[in-house]
Length: 498
RNA sequence: GGGCCAGUAGCUCAGUUGGCAGAGCACCGGACUUUUAAUCCGGGUGUCGGAGGUUCGAUUCCUCCCUGGCCUACCA
View: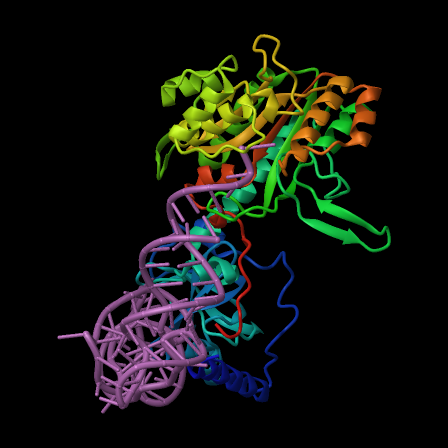
């Protein structure tokens, strides 16, 4: 710690000692009952018509953090911030008495205080509380970031998110919106009769997606467990169980690189509904997203760094092969020689895993050449079977599955398919994946015998849908990095000697 | 993992073509009874990310390292 920082902290500690010696408790417990405490913005709304220089006669109690002090000798203006916003306090020596006036001004910005006083509007028109009594609720020992510029350093914002949220209204808004989106999703699903469930995060076999898992170890069971990469296989077991509409909204973990689009833990919604297919799920997704966005953004059309995004229905739909023709001018098919596909990949500097078949290569080319170009919400239908071991085959499109992804601003936002419920075929698909695993494809799906057993009891035809919540929030808030929408994104540990 | 960029006071940032490190806010002291980025007077508080190297002298140049950002790769 630098001496300047130590000095600022020591000054506050010294104040703390003085406060104690004045007989003031620096960490009071209860200030008032929660029903009595009013919010800054609510008072501002309620007294919007109060004229400048007029007292309302109404007394109010508020609690918040002292954010600014403007002293004028025998009067002073203080701003406090509560969870809803800020409000000005007026402190006057003639109202408080000399001793109280002095001790109120002795407090620092950052301190939490509770106050009681009359709601007034100042001569300059600011709704204020004329403080009659006050109480220190918590002494702050560290200086706040700058009042005007706030906390800008990206690293500091993430490492000390509490400071970012405390001083940057914009950050607070992002997370309030995130919360509103999640709440709205729950309301939507609950209103449609879905059951919210919780399935294991610690899984013996990490399945349901193609990703590297985190491994951990259970001492008593003497076994490795994996942090789930997806809840999919457990949710499908619940369809076997007879629940016809379930969802889980929770964290997944993938042991991969960190980027503006990837955090090792991220939030995913997975929804399963019996007796529907992927085309139904596309309509369902449209309804879900448009309901949520119009609720939290007030519109389906909004500005984003990549341009105006319109979620007005219907969204564009095209197959992966159509998209390749449209965006990359490539006419690809599974009938082509694999050599030819590999050539096309190579020309476009796309690396192909040695175990990749035609479907994989096509999907890879699509991801690299097409996805980044898609800005408006677009449903890409029919993903290759090779990369979709859990999806039902598309009878009209051999080699492809009944699967779609929603792409917006170059990112996969949602992924859905008609779930494969034929246990024999599922076993074959798993075996094919196991072959790939042997060839060094670490991400190939492992065989989950217990899941196969469940399927053998019979899972009804089911539509499944996964939505990347972080990415949805990014789009709704215009954030270009996933770190901006995750409160505490994963960072390297700070080292003492650096 | 690779490339580029950045790290200077609590915060936001200047700056040194190698010669005592500087501004605003914050903070400390003083004045001030209606301000709201209050104002006025006075005060600069620093491991210039870390460790080496070159040099009479390094915050500046070089090497390595740490952390972060952007791009890229990985994430089918």
